[in-house]
Image (cartoon, rainbow over all chains, first blue to last red; front, side, top):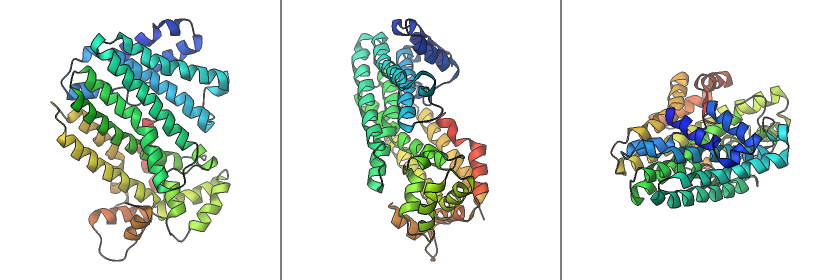
Length: 306
Length: 48
């Protein structure tokens, strides 16, 4: 936690933050709202036996990159909780651009040998994530397109977090690339979790309302189950709580939830195999990520065991 | 595995590997059982 606070203070003391009140507020909020995967650089550093005290710029970069990405997500999803409803779309977009720029800028505080490759990695992450978001807003409706979006949109952030940790630990290009690949798999798993969560929320999430096809909904629309026609009919009525509940029940009975769980399990196996082949001093910090990701699956299986 | 192939194997009548049986059990659960687990484990904790 101490390392995280140090990273947020680096953001708070940045000249751009000092002259921009909304940027200041965003960074202040980060003091108490840690972004998902803020500790990925730390975990990769621990796994490769690096010096954690050098990580502050990497943790700061991941923190403000996450804030910038979320602002764009909220704009694209027209999320009612989005900051754009408080300060307007234009200013939210400006803030996002500033945060993503700052993510690269704070990496100049890294050791000279690291700042250039680290900045290149964060810029690549921004480009790749933007491409994934661009694919996503086109509402992919096939399995192939879904996986392309999941990989493009969700993997770069997590992959880059681990990559930066390994890079700052001085682990060498091959280890850093292996960490990147592990993070990419983790990103796909997180997208599946996110889709499950969104589809099962009430009232209906934007994924239902905007005609998106997160994985459970895609399954229920494509699989040849007996209630497919009814499911398609319900999709336009999910503002009605009873219709949403019926549609969500179909996700359960048609096998949509089971399919997502199976995809999580397949990726977990793949990630563990990848992990076993990585040359790490200590694989536990990365293995724990998979344990955490699969804990809900195990609880679910136990709950429904007959 | 494709959606079509998964659906066929999940609802096949023949003897199934343990994992497929466990996945099939999910389809027999009520929505409230699934939501209870979702709530207990706060899947959304990752994304908030």
